[in-house]
Length: 226
Ligand code: DX5
Ligand code: ZN
Image (cartoon, protein in one colour):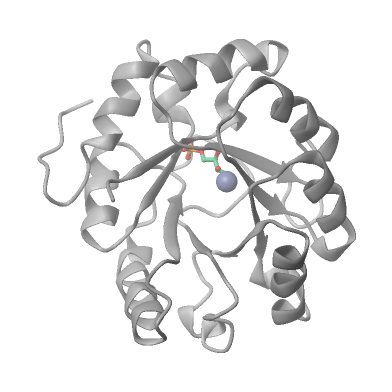
C-alpha cells in the first residue's frame, strides 16, 4: 500500500468547507482529517459531531476524526451516528483506554489512539490488539501551522515494531503536525503510512500538486521540493 494523504480541514476555509473538501477530493486525497478540540484538553475550540454529520453528506472520503477532548467517552456515540470512519482518542485523555477503544469498534468505527509528543510508546503495550490506527503527534496539539518536532521520529519506528511483533500488521500509523514533503519523507522512512497535513495542503496555491507531492513521500520515492 502506498502512502495515504489526509488533508486536515483545520486549515481549510470553514465558511466554504464543501468547496475545500472538493478541492481535496479532486486532488486525490485518501482521507479527510477532522480536528475536534474542546478548549480544555487543548487550548483551542473547533467543531463537533454536527459538522461531521454535514461533511458525511458531501463526501465519500473516509472521515478521520481526531478527538482532542477530555473524557472522549462522552462523544463516541455521537461521532458514530454522525458517520465518522476512524475515531481517534488521546491516550492522555482516557482513564480506561482499552474500554474506550473496544467501544469505538463496537460502534462500528475504526479505533485510533493519539500520542502527544512527550508520551512514550509504551502506553500502547496492552492495547496493541484493540487498535486500527496510531496517530503520532509531531506537534503539541491545538493549532495548525506549528513546527515539526523531530524527536518523535524514533517513536514511529518503535510503534511499527510493537504492532508487527503483536501480529497487528494491518494497523496504520499516521503522523500529524508540521508535515510537508521534507518531514513527510522522514516519517514515512520511519514507518508512517498516513500523512496528515493542514498548512502544507490548504496553504498551497495548488492543492492537487501539494497532495501529489505528499503521496510521493513514500520511502521508495524521492520527494519533490515544495
Ligand atoms: C493539530 C492538529 C493537526 C493540524 C495539523 O493539533 O491535530 O491535525 O491540523 O496542521 P499542520 O499540518 O498545519 O501542522
Ligand atoms: Zn489532527
